[in-house]
Amino acid sequence: EAGVAQSPRYKIIEKRQSVAFWCNPISGHATLYWYQQILGQGPKLLIQFQNNGVVDDSQLPKDRFSAERLKGVDSTLKIQPAKLEDSAVYLCASTTPGAGGTTDTQYFGPGTRLTVL
Amino acid sequence: EDKVVQSPLSLVVHEGDTVTLNCSYEVTNFRSLLWYKQEKKAPTFLFMLTSSGIEKKSGRLSSILDKKELFSILNITATQTGDSAIYLCAVTRYNTDKLIFGTGTRLQVFP
View (cartoon, each protein chain N blue to C red):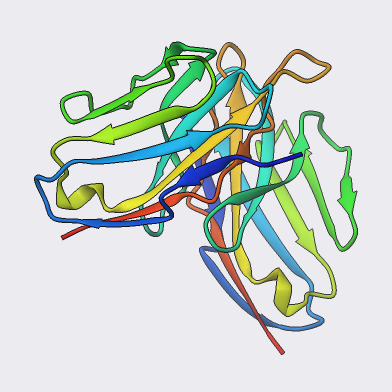
């Protein structure tokens, strides 16, 4: 079974520029998450999709971050304009309900390391 | 506010040592606790714990949850250099699938 795919793996931009990340979840996984992991911290949820609908975007800085999952499969996360504090690893994860009906076990992609100069 | 605290923040041991990593939590409507290993960038799933007192084991790794005292431990016996990683603890709540992560414990195993 192929894992969660993300691209690019690395990105360096200057502040105020725009950047986009792409994620393709594990086939059949209806739930997709984007996390931001700043160096020295645990991942923090930015947005959760169930199919192509947003379930939770309470921690997404909506003035500069946006995400979409138009066909309920792959997703893009965009930052426009980027700030220095956006330097982090952006992780995508996906999951599907298990026998108990929960989606606790999330499977992560390799992440994109963003550096904003 | 939901809180997940891991200790120690960093640990340096020699191969063959046994280590114990701690995770305490304060969340409303607790559902489960998960352990992940993060070597380069992608966290990889280790264990999910939902019931107190039932040990989960995989090779040299084991974990147990205490829902009364609100903590979990992850044990690694006979450590190897390949165990060097950041170990992340996360919890989930009922009515949401969101993972709430701690800051992680960085383990370094030297030969």
